[in-house]
Image (cartoon, rainbow over all chains, first blue to last red; front, side):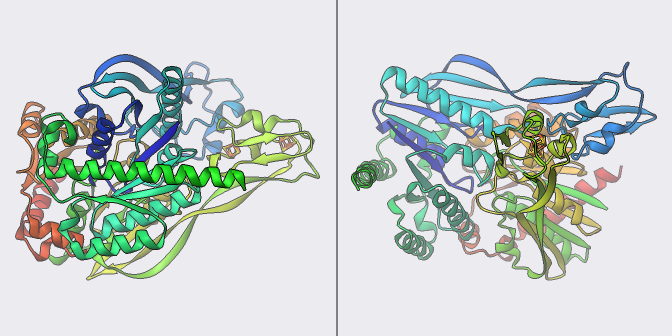
Length: 301
Length: 283
Ligand code: SF4
Ligand code: SF4
């Protein structure tokens, strides 16, 4: 089974539209949306919700007021400024609580409740292109990494059970904990970028992260014609760093039009854009084979 | 002293463009402004503001180190740790730094006093200035998982100023809360597409949860549909500004040039937007 993750570092590069389109072209796959902060893939996949589950990702502390003697011990231990005192009444701000439980350990009155909390929901949906696992992290919650790992586990279970050959993952923005949780142990990462200094800079950071985990990667340059000169720079960078450029896409209003119609670019209509994505898909398959062969070579050695 | 954060549920909507141009526009009008780049996973404000950096400081967190001579391998520390950052073996204790949330629990609980805490670098803060505008950004080291401590430190070190403009990371979870918490007003930048609207709704949910007053800037307002405007009207959300797509701006953006050099929207209209917000905050 091949686990493919598509990320971009920077948002707004067209990543999700591309994930939907690649998923439309791939046969026999499961999709996962690991952007648990702002999941959008389901909006273009004609998705029908099949299952919804609560996600319990960590604990939060709360003061049991009738036991509290206002001794202030907890205040000294909390490193996250989550505990405050007003007129001798102590309270824990659940947004700031990190869930470490140290206050509970040291409270002499046993006046702190420390319980698992629901920090989001995860779903399985049926789409026009196969099963999709996605989620919604609760607002202001902090367990995005754990939720991402959970989604990937569920997707692998579905893939194993029904003999799917590929998992296509829409990754979150940035380089922090949810991104790390999305790419560790995957087989191939695609970076979607565009020719701007910001997106290029983010691509370099994301690439360094991918190297950190020793994963093969390819790149797609969207809106390449906004700044052809910079596109050349990105291609040169890719070449130097062993990143396969899987293809380039022009700036095209069809991208937004497809989204407005609730469709992937492939399902929307035949256009120059959909053709460039089909080319990308072909090159991707060739590169996946190359990576696979390299892995086998390494094993033989 | 006014603190305004610029955020967006969805990335790539033009948040940094609004934040940098707003900060620059205010500074040009003689205001004392600090621009704070809290998008510590991908700080890009510097590309446009091109600040002269005068100070760099490291951000570190405390992680436990075990004195194996004192340790009796009782296992209490691992039991205390809610984040599985410790594993006690027969004759060793393993610490997984990247899982540690730096709570100090193990340090306080160890009955043998065998744990000390040492600082570990996870990022840095750079500060300087750009044409009279104070500039500050946080950067998470690549490979590190936790952005909030960098943001927290950044906000602690922030110099006092008449106006603070905070460029927040995308999303609605903990790194964003750390950035926009305790600010006076939140500008949500969106675009009128289904993804933009879906993510805007989440961002509005966040603003309401935090009880922060907010308004919306609709970028590339002519690409997409009318549903975002309908939504704002229905929810009684103020639309602060609408900015149509402009190829020239996209090109300038790609090269790291300020949009305000090209279009008056990013000077005059953003200044007006500020006055409108400031008037309301003072009420
Ligand atoms: S609590 Fe202290 S003595 Fe016990 S295993 Fe941990 S470090 Fe060793
Ligand atoms: S400081 Fe807290 S999070 Fe880190 S290892 Fe100790 S108990 Fe675990």
